[in-house]
Length: 298
Image (cartoon, rainbow, N blue to C red):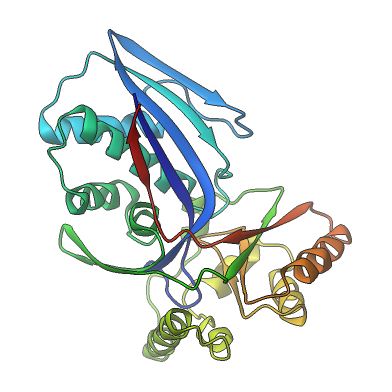
């Protein structure tokens, strides 16, 4: 049996649309083994609907690797224990893809390198900002070069914390991405390039003073806020409570704040603030995961 633990991820960090992501201390744990025949899928403590047939994303990721290396399996058994909420902008699909591919690579004889697995995962996901930190951990900047992904992973200060604020509704990624314009102005593109660079340098170097400015974005958050109730008001409240930077995680609706202390005060303040709204939100404080996916054979 292969056990894989894959972290949640937060992508589109600030101005880093489709290019920057971070691994968080919340996990999807998979136990995958080859059996004599058929497909068996068990989802332990699942709070969201997860397919238990060949449409299951973990299984489709396993098959993608098998097809790539020409391996013909007998049958597959999957046990999934996930803390990561589905369709909330925390990389639940990337965790499934990376976990399934890593396990399949072991079962089929370890024929693929991690770089090749990353390329296959990006092909399935469409962009690299979630799957890269899910595999390698830490804070990742990634870009596509044809069919290949070029990236850099940096380990962050372990005393940094990330406040993950998740509402009781979801926004489909396809719907959220459909709101984005086909073209943007040079001014907006230049704005995001400079701010993404500022955000990345500040986060890596622990420069919390410039992190808020670096998180400003003009490429996706102004369009996606239509699907996030009171997004701008929530952002402002997080800054009142000491957030160093706040942004929409992935395509939302989760909102994430970077904290450098004051976690208890922040969580209590946001919890009280959310009680006055029409939707139920949770606020959870997570550490960075600087390790990424962990694989073991049982």
